[in-house]
Length: 195
Length: 190
Image (cartoon, rainbow over all chains, first blue to last red; front, top):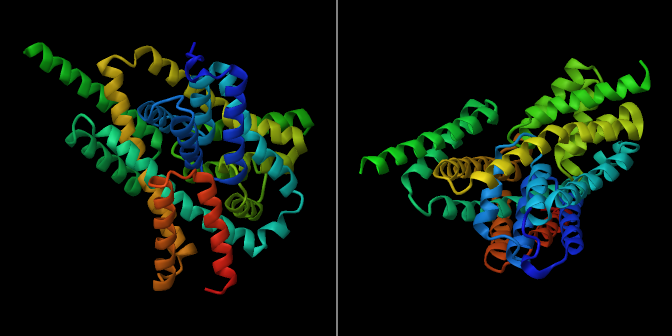
């Protein structure tokens, strides 16, 4: 079980914090990346449940999962913070707001779709999301290039080209990266043994 | 078709979408279209286009929004529950399994090397999304590049980045601020 004593907060407080964090972001932004940025701000910078590097590990795992990033990141971060109950609280927080909003919106969506201000507001938020992603990218880049620079840069460039040019499923990319990482580990081991 | 069969079909359709939706919302939308419009015939294409417009302007993860909307239209609240649970089922199982593997073997060179590679992949994916969103903000729906609009968008992005990265403001208020600013600027007729 994850260590629930660090930070000196009780389980219930942790669950509430998890639920509130995912609930508020899910009720406002519609990008899965937004939830990662908010979690990083809340759980790394403010509450200090995880270090920045741990959070980056979770981002790497999340990116290898299918499905809505908001759900998988809540699942993982929730578990690391408070076990399965934590996962449950965080995922619940993600799915309740869209559920409530869509349930209402479905009934009279014509009025909402044709309201120009709603669109303009959401467009504006997208600019904020771009800035937020840049912030996340800087953290990830620093972390990934801590030990060496060449290998991470090559992987990043190849992965970027794969996404932009081929348009094939990310599943294959994630599998390919897994294999590449494994091969690299084997090569390192062989090098160490050869010495 | 009885209610139960319909709800089961909705559930199964969204389990498939959830299991195959790698790479974020933009990758998921064609899958929803395939399952909901082409395979199951739950919706017409024009209803699906309405759904896309709604996804764009409502908060919440796009896949969950789509699932709730489709389920709701077809079978009310039970349909919406079935669709939502369906699309998160496989992702949740995969996420927790990968996390367990990571927790167990995170000190081995093998897993560290794999996670490092996946981090690089994650970075590439995020940069790709960032470019897509940024381009969309500069020229919405394929309109041409306008100098004033581009300058405005760049200025807002830089200011937002400054506030979050250096001033350590929470992302949420910054994002809401960007939305509000955009409404004001549009109302002033820029």
